Amino acid sequence: MAIPAIEVQDLVKVYKKRRKPSVRALNGVSFSVRQGEIFGLLGPNGAGKSTALKILTTLLQPTSGSAAVLGYDVTAQPLEVRRSICVVVQEDAVELYLTVRNNFISFGQFHGLSRIEIGRRTGRIIELFGLEEYMNQQPIDLSGGVRRRVQVAKMFLVDKPVVFLDEATTGMDTISKRATLNAIKEESKGGRTVILTTHMLEEAEELCTSLAILNHGNVIAEGNLDTVKATTVWPYYLWMTFEKVTRTVHDALKRIPSVKLEVKGRSVELTLKDQQMALKTVARMQKTGLLQHFEITGASLEDVFVELLDKQRGGRG
Image 1 (cartoon, rainbow, N blue to C red):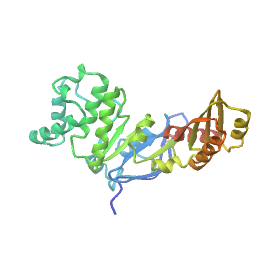
Image 2 (cartoon, rainbow, N blue to C red; image 1 turned 90 degrees about the vertical axis):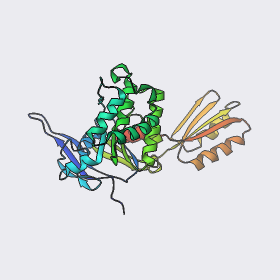
Image 3 (tube, one colour; image 1 turned 120 degrees about the vertical axis):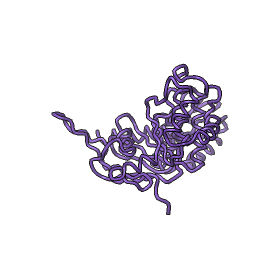
Image 4 (cartoon, rainbow, N blue to C red; image 1 turned 60 degrees about the vertical axis):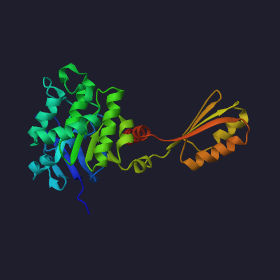
């Protein structure tokens, strides 16, 4: 059985400040990432994502618990961990006054690649990230989004099996973002493991094969998208348009078990427990002869994220 790319067990991090109360940033966090996955580490500000990332990349020591990258313990074997990873942090990490081409050359040489090998790999990377037109320009003259794209592309120039991307598409325009997301997918198909932190939940839903949601230092959901979405009680939405909403239609709608019923003119929105209930509702409404249009959709990752956080707030209240 393959060694997990990431294995985190009961990870705790307490920040102790002089003359101030201690802050427990991670509270027994556990999760596992298989090799070749795109794994999303998600959560609101202050959830513990940055702390977990710093521990996994050997920039911070845990208070207790364990974390390993490709079987290497981050505390006992930090050098082996660093040899196995690339990290894109939120801050720009490009040489502003070297051309984009020379950024790739210097980065490749730093990692021990020959000029021939750098040239071979650069050709593929610039095509993958759509950077051809920028190769002879200096990053200082480029937009923030293109600079960010160059930074992410550099990480894929070298053969590191695990890549950490912290808010990788920050500041990118739509074209840059699409090129970067497609490139990340291609790299994952080649067997690389990608650990992604992002506030863009639609990106996480598109990219991630599995994820963990953190809040206040705890994992509140983990697994693939279907598993995480199943943690919500009302994951389906039904929109219907009627010729008119008569009293008979309105009374029938009120008898349907739902967490939300909203009627606006001729439009009706329902939040339902499962798809079967949604289909039964449509069949019932069609019998009225007044239903003109309907649409059924599943909950998005953002919907699930918000509901999970709302549950936590309610639990603390």
